[in-house]
Amino acid sequence: MLKDLSEFELIQLFMEARYPDALLFLDTSKRVSMAHVLQKMLPLYKLESQFVHLANPEKQIEVTIFVNRALVGMQEVTNYTFFRQTCEKVFRLLGENLQVDSVDRLGVRFFWGYPVKDVRVASELVQERLLKSTAFNVFSDFPLENVSVSFTTKIDTFNARLSIGNMTIEKVLITMGPATTSGSPVIERKQYLLADVDLFVTNLKLEDARLVPDRAYQSSRKVLDGLVQSLNVSP
Image (cartoon, rainbow, N blue to C red; front, top):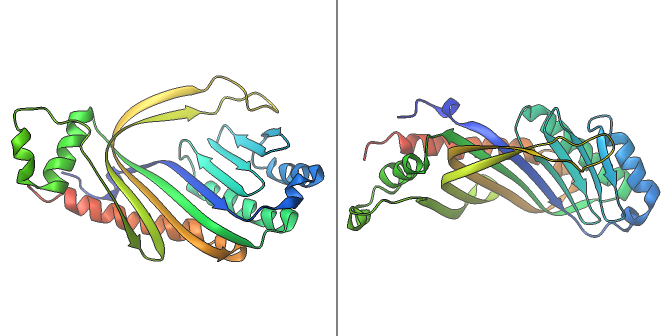
């Protein structure tokens, strides 16, 4: 039985902003200017005509900016505050350098995990605690693996896609050399009962985008609170 939310850990975290084509991105000086500012937070970089990519191995965070979308990802959540600050910096640069003033879709995806020893344990938790259905009795003579629950809903102001079940998470540790994104990643695999919480909003002003990651974080905690309560109900 889970005690509270603290038994879940925020494993991985991603933000994606999609916006109308920003033609100023085609100006090399604009891409260099963005990389110059972001390099203070993300020292490793790679500049191409199609994208700007920067990373901070210590913080396990990467940023990639394209002509019509921007991505921020933490392969291992070491510091949520740094993630939020990085998102805010990216939004500011999109406005100042590329004159982006609106976002078509802004999503934040949270991977919350409860460590388990194997697939069976996670599947049993979902089957016995979440589904609580006698329909599964017909399979009593067979081992069930990878039992999961997926659905879409609305949470606060967000559209939400939720998936709860077993997952092996691969933490790809950033080990790039100076001024390059090449290198051999170190991969760590761990088994979790995973709550994949994908929240997104559409059609907002860029100036409002900076508030979204924190709002999404609080909404994802609500999902997690409901999940923990469900898991603590005896079948």
